[in-house]
Length: 346
Ligand code: TRP
Image 1 (cartoon, rainbow, N blue to C red):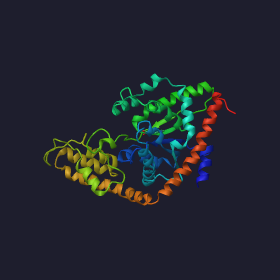
Image 2 (cartoon, protein in one colour; image 1 turned 30 degrees about the horizontal axis):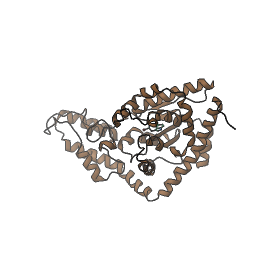
Image 3 (tube, helix red, strand yellow; image 1 turned 30 degrees about the vertical axis):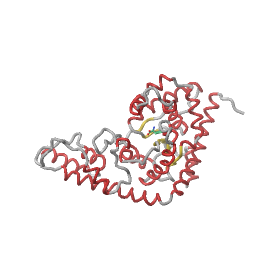
Image 4 (cartoon, rainbow, N blue to C red; image 1 turned 90 degrees about the vertical axis):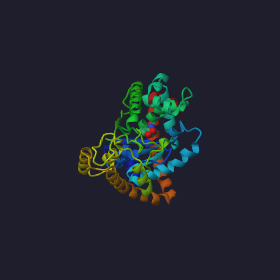
């Protein structure tokens, strides 16, 4: 199956658009990833040529003191992919640090990007603040959007499913694409588009704007029933909804935000919202429903994940096969760019 898929990728015979997206392997994936991208990736793998990049090299740009953590999480994230339904016969999964062509492309692209442009990237600015780097920014960190442009263009991807925070990376990629094509005098690289999910940011269960491991407000993809119950019980509702009879507020009520994101029965959710607004519906009842919905979603993922975790060699094999295929794809693009730019070669 794989060989056939590879041929199709290399020549793109059937004209399916190419997707590249990825994750930094710094921890297990959680429901925020599920809503923001995993769910749509599972749906896209039939209609697109999809490549998933385990972006370990990018993760190292702010984990220079923790290579071990990043290495360990490659397998964790790959297991998460398979557990949610990414099918390795349809989607190629590869490891970034094992694709040397990406580094060469990054070095070439850096010649076409100014330091002030790097410093202007709003996501980078926010991340520098968040991580408290002040002036001590690792140079690799400042440059990672250029490396990300190398990732995307090496696969000639035109569709990049990502969260909102990655839009500046797509813009910076397209600037590099235009600059390179102009330099080469030919449309060697295609521009790409971000594909945003309709819910690209899930708040943490504590009501904070973002679900994130560092904030300790995540629900992981193999959460137990007990974990789920605990998280749902801790959820922020409407602080003014003191008695069941009181009218309650749905906006900003995290339990309803989660129901919107995960409950398959939209109609019933709308009825619940109306009832809550009118008064007479207790937080406990709404939370019970959410708990059920989350259990139904997570239980099969957790069970598949447990099965998969018994056979790490199987997952490593998938990564190895995927990475080998991607080595060819990325090397081809690198050769094309080097030729176009007129880089010396023997
Ligand atoms: N920057 C992305 C993130 O933090 C991960 C990533 C690396 C990526 N390379 C990519 C996403 C290429 C899309 C395309 O989530």
